[in-house]
Image (tube, rainbow, N blue to C red; front, side, top):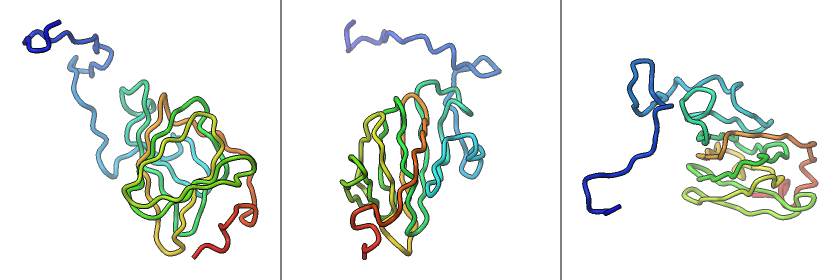
Length: 162
């Protein structure tokens, strides 16, 4: 196919037709996101779905906002077969990982992270006074597998953070 040609081959996206038979973008309006009970959750991390299998025509992606209150952290969890991409929209984050969660990485606003499938981790808000907000995407969808809780004092440098 000639890339300069006006004839562009397009795949079949007919499965995305709406009730009127049109294929159009789907918008989830601010404040009208579905109940958070429709997406996987972990104690200490609230996930709000913007694009998902549950409320849009999407079939292979989940995209949403994850919120950790000031000083809070999630329970240990992984995302099954899902690849996860994250972006720190506001706040300071820490992700614990590794055997017994002995390793961690810290991130700030504007940082991006990739979390491989099946990787147990704990998402933390380092700031004791301000919330942490992530923008997160997963393929194929928002899979959340919660694992047994760990105590705060089992997470290196967590209880004595500034």
